[in-house]
Image (cartoon, rainbow, N blue to C red; front, side, top):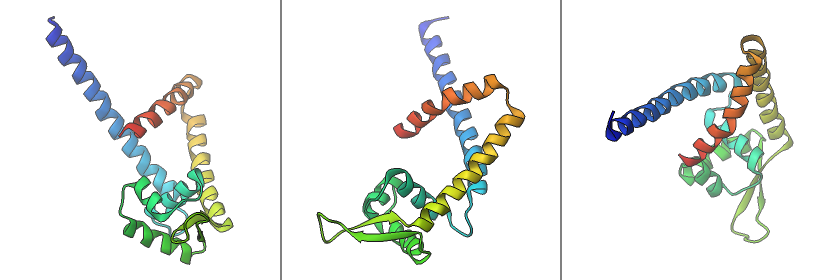
Amino acid sequence: MSSAESRTGEVQDVRETANRLRIAISAFTRRFQEVARIGDLSNPQLTALSRLDRLGPMTTSALARRERITPQAMGATIASLEALGLVERNPDATDGRRSILSLTAEGRTAIQSGRNAVDDKVTAALKDSFTDKDIETLSAAAPLIERLAGLL
């Protein structure tokens, strides 16, 4: 086999891995979102709550940048979360024109209850259907998948 043929095979292997990851992660994400539903909150609302929970208080525009959507779209999502009492605005101490978003106690409870439901469901699936070796492999793969997500 020539080196060109070898490289072509390697590229195909990497492409196949990328395709399998895309399919698997998409399926996992769909099921995850079904389990993670909190009341009637939409996916954008759940995502905004989760970001504020993980990253801490931030502006609407910073949150929009993180999600790669327009500030106007994020503003509509945040307004709906404010109306539900899950998010609050406070003046930015360094720039009076901006406001900082943070979770309310109700927002933290909502996001935690959703995470707990997902964690409970995944834990049960792992215990019931995976070997210790499978779980060890998934645990080792998690940081790699996080790193890959950060590079996209």
